[in-house]
Amino acid sequence: MSCNDGEDERPVTPLESDCCGYGCNPCIHDVHRDLIDKWERRRISKAGFSVRKNVLSLTKYKPFVISELKQACANCIFIRLNYGGLEDADTQLFLSPGQHVILRTSISSRPYTPISWTTNSLLLLVKIYSNGKFSKSLGQMKVGEDIEVRGPYGEFRYQPNSFEEILMLSIGTGIAALYPIAKSIVDDELEESRIHLICGFKSHAHIPLANELRDLSHYWNFSCTIKLSQIDNPLKS
Ligand SMILES: Cc1cc2nc3c(=O)[nH]c(=O)nc-3n(C[C@H](O)[C@H](O)[C@H](O)COP(=O)(O)OP(=O)(O)OC[C@H]3O[C@@H](n4cnc5c(N)ncnc54)[C@H](O)[C@@H]3O)c2cc1C
Image (cartoon, rainbow, N blue to C red):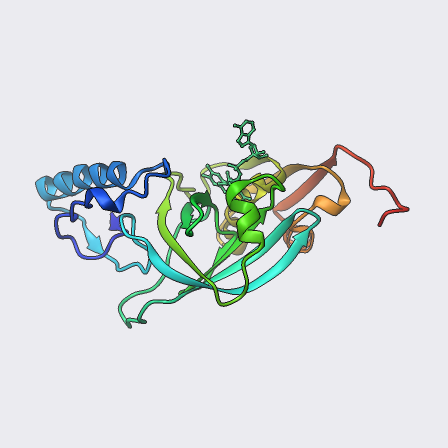
């Protein structure tokens, strides 16, 4: 078993003021209750527990800085966030493919699923809604600006070689959750599972991970079908 939140001390109870009041799901108080349950169970069993220190915290927002912003397709951007706190040799960023984090700015907070990460950075694929409170404000941010991050959340854990065939279905930015899972499977030389991804987008111009999907398609165990709901207007492109 591993703990995502540092030392195995009793998880510190968040202050009332730690809740931002934006209605985050999970709220910091729900996360704390869950951590206490797990901590109590570990204390009782006192077995098989190993501690790993993560840059990310389930209960505290950590400082990150935008290091790169890039257009991903017609309505999506890539945002790379670098950890802006003090580097510690015992600490590094980790999460499981498909897990999400919560981003917070002065505007609000929202969950996003990193498509890839390093030991101190996260790469996110964000759809910009022209009338969306948070995503629109993210689209207006600049390299060097601060964003707070907490997580990672999501109980899904892929067990290697648990299926012969895996069918993945996504629409739009739903691919953000599936891409890292598919990538982790094809990168594992011991994997014998075959993946078929069927993903839907509005048009060619709205396919955000076209190069990445092409790269995955070179692996023996990955194939992909892309469905478009509209034909691009050749006069516009
Ligand atoms: C676990 C999880 C992971 C996610 N991962 C990603 C990801 O990797 N990438 C990504 O792009 N998104 C992701 N999302 C979605 C993301 O969290 C936001 O919901 C999304 O960015 C929209 O937020 P927003 O503030 O821009 O839009 P909002 O302001 O929340 O609005 C969203 C849409 O709803 C409409 N709307 C808002 N209020 C109303 C209303 N009262 N009546 C009618 N319509 C309304 C808006 O016009 C807009 O079209 C994820 C969500 C979850 C739950």
